[in-house]
Amino acid sequence: MRLKTMNEVLLENLTNLDKPATSIPTPGVSTGKGGKELTATEVMHNKMQYMKQKFKKHANFKESVENYLMETAIGVVFDKIMEDQKADAEDYAIGHNMIKNFVQEEGYTNLIRRWTYKNLLISEMARHCEIYKDLIVETAEKVAKSNNNEDDVAYMMDSDLAERFVSDIKDLVPQRTINLIHKRVANSVQDFLSNNTENKLAIRDIYAKATEKANQLKDKSDAVKEAYINDAKARSAAIYRKPMNMLGAMVTNFSEAVMKDDDLRSHYLDENNHINMDAIVNANVVMYTVLEELNTMQMVDVSPQYIKRILKEI
Image (cartoon, rainbow, N blue to C red):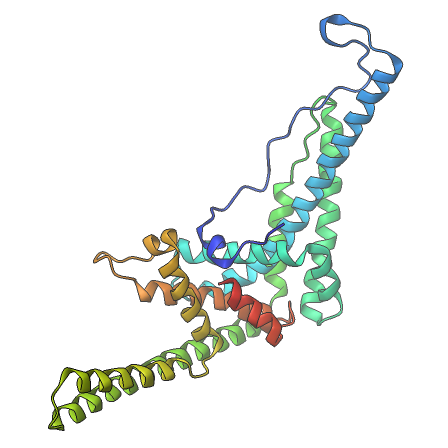
């Protein structure tokens, strides 16, 4: 299965966790269409199909609970980080869709295994995920059994348990962790803005000096002027090829993607039909915040290879 890129994640809508159940054949039916009596083999086949679909429905529900718990655990921390950032609904959607994509890519079981032995905080988060998974699945099984509807077994998540899980995760995460992530994101944003300002001033200086030198020459031909302009362009391009921090690389890659993708480009146009760089930077700061949360809390090993893969997916 091809994993969604961050661009695709930004464009997709949030989907509901619960999906409508599909009907399955009733076990033990001894007549078929038109009242025709079924053979013992056909009855057994129907029962096997019923049990197979019932098991599949149960497995799908369990997987949806696992994904919900893991996405929620990471999302609760993200929400606490964003509380003081004057974030809007789109910011939250970007962050939560990125978290959803991350959980699908890494897998619940792999994340639980990794978190269990990484550090005390995420070890406790993993333990809570496992405890609530068992509670939610067991409760759903009991409710489904009590309904006595063999034709259409439906597993539903208990809303009270879901709310208790959110509350418990909130209580687990100390404010000092939130403050540390805040500080790291703010430092990265400041570095990006400072570097961007320096680059603009340097490029402006390059073109100013090129223009001054061209005006001082006796030879005012177009060929000479073009040579100075080409030299200025080359030196300006070299400035943008200088090493930049993670956020800067994300903004650069995302800006290039916006220019190539019609849907993204239409979304990031301002009222004058120009690319809205402020909106692009803001979207990448939100995505970077998710990455910094994963990094600071050691939810994932942010190696050079991991960073390269993230930048490639933008």
